[in-house]
Structures are given as C-alpha cells and as structure tokens.
Image 1 (cartoon, helix red, strand yellow):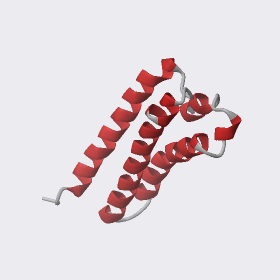
Image 2 (cartoon, one colour; image 1 turned 90 degrees about the vertical axis):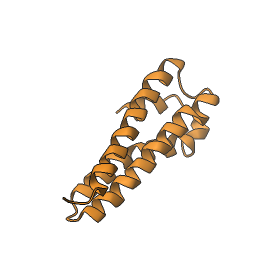
Image 3 (cartoon, helix red, strand yellow; image 1 turned 30 degrees about the vertical axis):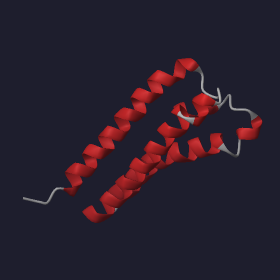
Length: 104
C-alpha cells in the first residue's frame, strides 16, 4: 500500500488534513472501478470510472503539488509517483474512451 508508505511521515497536524485526503482519494480509485464493474450497465460503468479518474487526478495533484511543496513527500518518491499516477490516469481515460464508444 504505497499511499500509506508515502504519507506515513506527514506531521501529526496533517493526519486529518492532507494525509487523510490523499489516502481517501487513493482508496477511492480501485473502489469505484470495482463498484462500476458490479453494475449491469455501461452508463453506470462510465459514471464510476469517471469518479475513479477524478480521484486519481486528485491524488496526483495532492502528492505532487501541496505535499511536495510542503516537504511532506520524500524527494525519492516524486518521480516514481508522478509516473505511476500519470499511467493510471491515462489508463482510466482510455477505458472511458472504450466504454463511451457506441456499439457497432
């Protein structure tokens, strides 16, 4: 669980702020994908994948924006996280494209 490892060193005053927000958004990504897959319609799938995409984008912003600027993220974590969340976001965007195509 990378999100816990990376946010473990946040100061205690961030426990209910930035740290909690990062963790909630990170957990939301796979949770929404699973919820969408459990539904029986493409419309529902699209909705939950959009929510997952929003959560993944929020995690990337929070980790690479405020957390990095405030020095809450170790320098050695910046580049790998940026690559991983960029790949997740691109994958979710591709999934949205595929699900949104009309059936032939």
